[in-house]
Length: 254
Image (cartoon, rainbow, N blue to C red; front, top):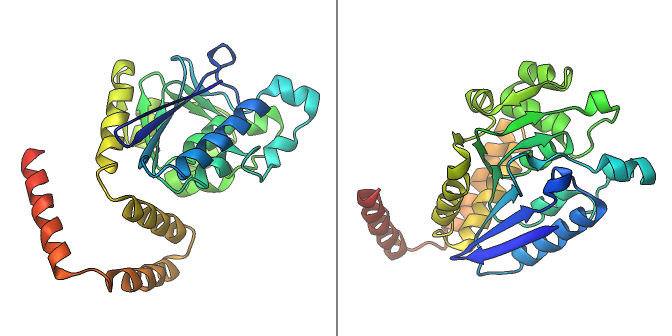
């Protein structure tokens, strides 16, 4: 139910339950946790692409049939083995969400746990928590308004309406929209570019951005100053010059 492919510093993690719209059963959530722990500890991997099998769904969220039997405790789970958002967050490496189809409710929350979103024209997003009768517990009610604005977030969450890929792009929810056949090439190209950055810098900078995003602006600026001052003291002029020349050479190729 979960596929992992690795090449050239990049891992592709594919939720593979297309017959169930890649719904996150207990087994799939545990597999995601195991996968992201493994990728966290694998220094050969610098960036990750997360996607769903098929063209219908990235993931439809929690497996509602399973919840009907076991109860809704998973909606408020905090352990990474039960909460895929926590599973992704614990990895510390950049995760690109390749949104191949619908991302619904808990699936929307998983998409928001990624660092960059590239959407197929087949992608659609929906927060159906209110219609299902479950209050989100994996961060959607707070993250969405911070990403697209409180009025748009309320429109989506208080109607349960679907948001198409092009509107998601216009609202700043996704980075870009591509044809279905171009989704994985675009995601892998971006992941490959990230993978050329030293791993310790990737993880440090990602954490700095994420930690600052959780703070008021003034505190976030102080956080940057504190961490930047501590890290930059070890950088030599020779290192900066070497890296500067590499940046210029790369710029000429792009």
